[in-house]
Length: 154
Image 1 (cartoon, rainbow, N blue to C red):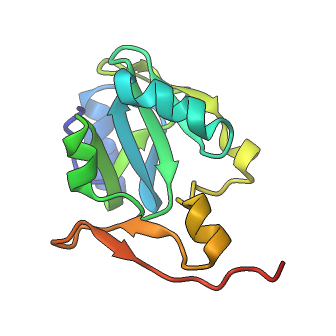
Image 2 (cartoon, rainbow, N blue to C red):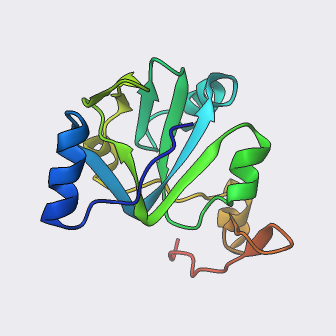
């Protein structure tokens, strides 16, 4: 997992970062979370989600990145499968197409235009059918918090 500094927010920070080496484009994870997992989890998850979730691949580390709605996966869940959760306005991931020494060239497997530029929102089909709302993982002590939503009229 890439240890990263806080997001760059000032011109002085940009100058300092570029003086240490050439950087590509970074995506600040404020409007979405990135669920980053090893290949043993990423490949089957990608197969199940198909084109429902913007997904990137880091060839050098063989890790998969799933761009999900904020708060939909707890850090503890990510860590339990050998992954990480990149989340919040002070965190970032290299944008696909960007080369870094740690990741080589990150590439899209499912580009965000396929999902209409929206992160994946977790939904359990049973909850959708019976109308109880999706189960959304949180970092609460129980690990799972049910959050209700209004089902669309059928």
